[in-house]
Length: 213
Image (tube, rainbow, N blue to C red; front, side, top):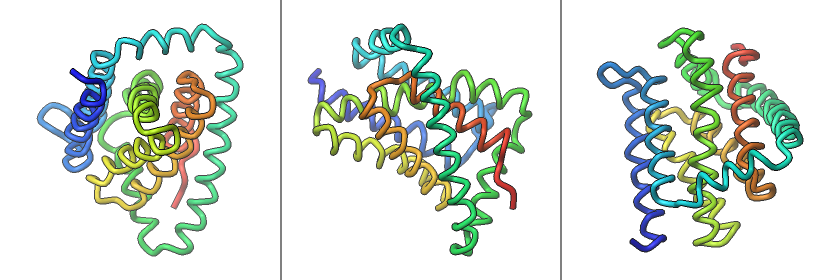
């Protein structure tokens, strides 16, 4: 199967996995957190099956300068948190729907205990999203469409699957995060760096230092 077709099939599969998740948030025995985790596993598996260089490149990244990448990942997470701190203030000031939208995002925590949410975020959801969205899709689309266009298309799809939530603030947050981590990946080509950044940011903004009303 031609490589460019693989990209489109895997991207379409990601849409089918993640859009219903944000629309329905639960399916049978799966609440949002189990369903999200399962989707991440399936997406990463599809990417690995489509591109044999995908996981070896990740292992190589883990072996090269890991300490520096972890430090820069944490630093970038702090910078992104600062961006959202300012965004939280100004969006509530300027957008009448912002408070309700932000509150709806934090309502996801009510469906499971932190004892389950934190490990899933730290070990699977944060790293897994980067492995798929940046490490597979953005990398492949940068090769196919060119660095800038591939980065922007992958970011648009990443933000777009969140539209199923009907929450404008969540889609805007996903777009900002996608641009931030996508640009970092484009510049550094390090999945470890952006996986650390994503995971640390998730835990900070959602668990440790959430934005109040």
